[in-house]
Picture 1: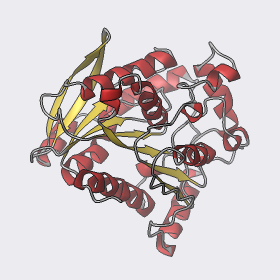
Picture 2: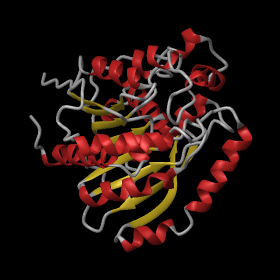
Picture 3: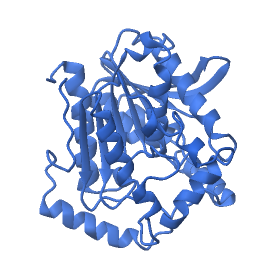
Picture 4: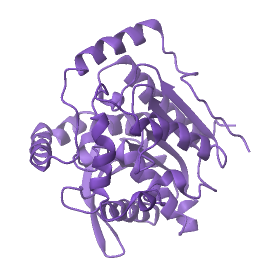
Length: 329
């Protein structure tokens, strides 16, 4: 088995200018409020502002020659909204995107820029899942939405792409949901076999908290370090820590045998860095893994206007293209 486990940023050209830019951005980020999962009013307000900021999103994609279709993925009685971006050329792959937002904010449109680049550069049909949020649904309902969307995508739900390779992409909470979905897809071997890779950005893989999460202090950027364990407990308040660590709720402890190749990114300043390190180490026992733990990178860094973000996103697109083209060892 060809296993590649990179425990550092080796392979990405993180030069002095990139690091200096990241440090300068982090100094500004330090003044921003920290994100909490339990302030329902603020979360609903943020969701409303997000939707306002997305007015005209379809027109922006049309200018890039991308067709947009919104429909519902249907499986086991669930009807899950999905947003599909189609490239101008004949698709060569399918990407199933699971957005981030701490399970409490976000929607399928929020990844339009990243998904547009994937669609164009990788010539991929991109399906983004508009799963229910934890402000109105239980964690297991959210996980069911993602599984239903994946089964629909893999089992002929798309008008085209029935025989194309499929890749799962997830960021933060979306990384958790993508990994949990893969574990559950193993119950449908023929569908699971169609998944040729996973790209996971700083996912949450232990809902009881890895050591770096439990040690997170108030200086943590973007996330409220001391509030992370209580927040995850609040979102999974129907179980204790043992239940939170049971897979697929915590994918880190699942049976990873047979998993597809994976590309994982974490940040050295992210309290979730142990989630990525530990998941990469476990995944590498079963399949090829490329892992980058990027210096000066906080949680959410691919959303920021920095060279670091562009390096990671460019490598993700390149990695998928390599597998579409069969250019891997």
